[in-house]
Every structure is written in C-alpha cells, then in structure tokens.
Image 1 (cartoon, rainbow, N blue to C red):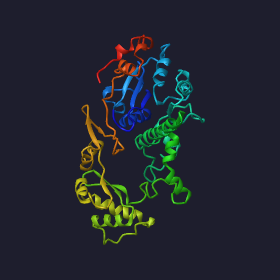
Image 2 (cartoon, helix red, strand yellow):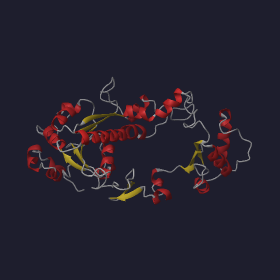
Image 3 (tube, rainbow, N blue to C red):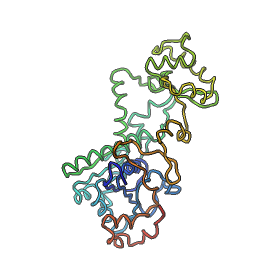
Image 4 (cartoon, helix red, strand yellow):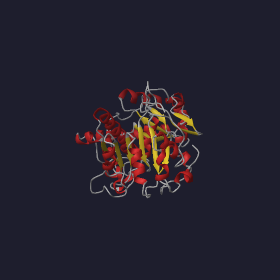
Length: 385
C-alpha cells in the first residue's frame, strides 16, 4: 500500500458500523489494517463479505477469543501495531484480556482507539444503543424535519460516521503524532454522543445568541427559509435550493422568472410562507432535468436531488473520479485527496480468515500459528480475496 499512512500497522477488533468505517479510512490512506474476526459471524452480518465495502483494503485474521490462547494471539498482533480500533461495550475488551491496560503494558507507544455510542463513562455507558438514539440525546435529531412534523432520520451519517468514525480517526491520528514524538501511547475515547454534540457547535452559538429558534423548521438551515429548501418538480423529482447570500438569491429569482415579481423581502420571516408557495408553484412547472439544465453552473446555488445510484454518474463527480470501480463494484473513491501522498483503494473486502497465515507470517508470528488456532480456524475460514 502507498499513501500517507504507509507502514502504519492497525489492528481492528471486528465490529459493525463506525469502527469498520474508521478502519477503512485508515486503510484508504495506506495503513496496513488487519481485522481480527471471530470464527462465527456477528448478529448483523449478512450477504457476501466480499461486498462489504467497509472492509475494503483490509486483511482478515480469525482468532477464537474463547480459545485459551485467543487473548495472547490478539496481544501478540497488538505488540506489533501502532493503532488498535475496538468498538465493543465498555469492559468487554477487558474481560477478554485485551483491553487497553493489558495492551499498553506490552506496547507503551500504542494508540488504543475505542468506538462507542455512549462513551466509556456515564450513566448510559453500558446500555445498548444505535445511531438514532445517540443523535437524539446529543440534540442533533430534534432540528431535522418539517415544522409541525416529527424529526426525520438522516440515515446513520450524522452519528455513526460523522460524530463517530471521523472523530475516532482524528483522535487516533493525533495520538499517533504524540506517540511518535514522545514514545507514549494513550487511549482515545471516541463516543458518538460527544462527536455528534461537537458537530452542533455552530448551532449552540446561534442558540446562545438568540439567532436559533427551538421550534423545528423555523430557522435558516432547517427548512424554515424558503430559499434553503427542497422543491418538487413536474416529474416527481426534487431540486435543492441553497441561495443564502443576497447575490445568489437574486440569481435564483432571475432564473425562476420572478425577478420582477411582487414578493416579500428575502429575510421577511412573516413573508416566508408566500415565498415558499410561489417557489413551489414555479418549480412544479418543469421536470428535474429541465431545471438542472437551467441552473447548472450558475450562482443560484440550486442542484438536483440525486439518488445514490444517480450520483455515481453526475458529470462533475465523473470528472473528479469521485466514484471508482474496483473488484467489480462501483464505490466512493478515497477522500480527502493529498497532492504528494494520495491514498488508494486496496484489495477487495476479505472473507474472514482469508489472510491469517499470511499476516502472521509477515508480522513475524507464523511459528505460533498452531498454538493460537489449534481448533483449525484457518483452514475452515480461508477464502479468496
């Protein structure tokens, strides 16, 4: 692998969601990520593991953590790693004998990244949960939705991947920087509630300054403003409008044919219902593609709402190679882009255990393979990359 993290060894203790995404990002940037899978798939595992894109660029080792030598197998790999990513409930890794204290005693420069929803401490630390609950408690779910309606779920992008994975990666890389200069590792407690709350910093400031109303759908960026909203088109499609600045708003009116219309002022909140109704009426007169042709490349800040499949073929994203095809699957390319040491998508997602012998040999542990996996897990789980 090439990239800015080439040579950095990462051990990922298999989990779901934000932990695997964080490890994928490190792999995209060149790290040698070894995922430690268990012999039996998790409760949410489904489908062909070779299509689980969150595991792209990684290698898989199967370790039976119930085996008497399972913990030692993991710790021997951790001894040779710079970063560990673990996403279990607080205390689980400790009970298995592979928690941060045991790991750091053997590898003092280790960065031990812990990905949880509620964090390592607090009244809810040991409670089960998922993205929707974390962002609900963090205050990020409440503002999303229409006035008078319930909050709307923003997939699991805000919590799991925004407030979780990305904060875990930032924390691990910051701790790695310290470890390289001081030789001292540390634990990174990446809680989704913390990261999600941190994402709302702008709105905390607006709320404190009296510029944010607590009612859903009544603010500038939550669909309250008619010039920052989504409108249906004649063919059932939608256009996203984000004409916040006055010069962009003027261009929006011009292209909608409303430049000379008798309309309320842009920031006349009392007149927003009138503006919204007029915009909706005009947008409904043409198809999404017709509006796209009119607005694309202008400063009106209007864009078509594309599906996941459609986005892969948008001309701008095609020109930037935002999506690439690897191992027969079209998928998002590596981000962000570095000019001198760019990352790249590595191998296809492995079948659990496909790389056990190779990794242990490369990491200088091949001689211990029969001891660690005396139950024959290697031969039972080996698959094609």
